Each structure stands twice: as structure tokens, then as C-alpha cells.
Length: 223
Image 1 (spheres, rainbow, N blue to C red):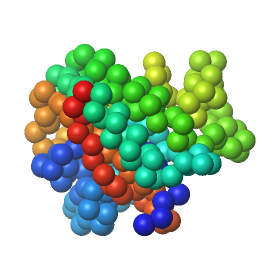
Image 2 (cartoon, one colour):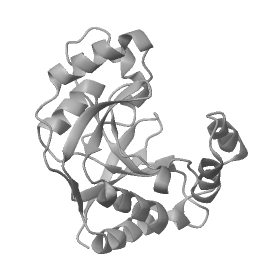
Image 3 (cartoon, rainbow, N blue to C red):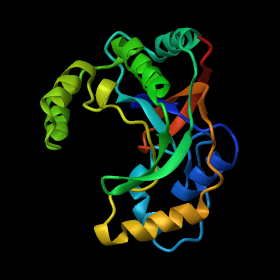
């Protein structure tokens, strides 16, 4: 399989939460297949934006491979990183409104999760091609802070390191008057959320030619 971009995700392990996420978004990036949607009117439309990524939490945002690097080298580096990076844990996950979209976010001390994400961003940075001028312009339309712009230039993405906020996205941007409805709808369909929430592995994913992401390989954190 040929991929246009790569990323490092947290993917929920096999179980109720992973099954919910696949059905909610209609795409299972672990098995690379379309999943029959939940019977919720309007769900297909509000999940259109996050669908192609699958149910995940981003640790290293999508990037193109730098010139002179290849997938084999990226996989080797990720294996080495996982062997020196300790797993992380927090109290649990909670359904949250972030801006105008819904996501599951960590509860309690998130320093361990932030550490794993920062390690992924930094350890694999030599494999990341720099963003194009068009990409920089597009990112800057979000009215970045001075620090976010500096992070964009250094790491290719503005919401990393201290600006990072781990989340598993459930919807795209919602109309203000629909946020309460979709919050209650999501809550009614969510399985029991993990408590504590453990991040014991990371996943290398690739963006296919159709724009959807799929799992390439998981790596257990054993540092």
C-alpha cells in the first residue's frame, strides 16, 4: 500500500470503546473497512470531517516523508522510540465540548500523555517533510498565537508540545444550537469509559490515496 502521509495515533485497544468509535464514524482504521453506522438521524453529516481519520487521538500530526527517508526507517525509529518511552495513564476519559466539536478528553493528571506525544513529535521529526508555503498560509488562517506560529515553523504543526491537548474526536464543527443535542446523543451511545485510561501503545497510520487513514503497525510502549 502506498501512503501520501503518515501520523502517530493512539488507537483504543480492541473492545467496546473501539467498536463504538468505528460505528460512530463509520470507518474502522484498524481493519481499514467501512462500518455500518449507528441508527442516529444526521450522524453521517456531523461525523463527515473526522471520518477519514478514524477514531483516534493524535500524538504526532500527519506529515509527508522527508526527502531521503522511507517507511522502513520510520518504522525502525518508532520501534526504538517505543522501547524507551514509558506508558502513560490518567484517571479516565470524559465527553467534552471543545470549541464547537465533541471529543473524549482525559481526566486528571495528563502529564504522562503529554510526555508521550512530545516524544513522538520530537523523536520522529527527521522523517517529517517541512510544510509547504500553502500549508503555512492555511494554518495561519486560524489566527495563531505567536507561540503557536513558532511551533508551526519548528514542528510543522501549531498544537504540539505545551499547546497539545489530547482528544479523541467525535464530530466536526457543530452549529451552536445543536451542541446540546449531539452531546446527549453521544452520551446515550457511549460505552462505559475506561477509568483509569491507559496509553500502553502507539500506532503508525498511513493516509491512503482515497484520503482515509489506516493502521500500519502498533508499538507497545516499554520504556
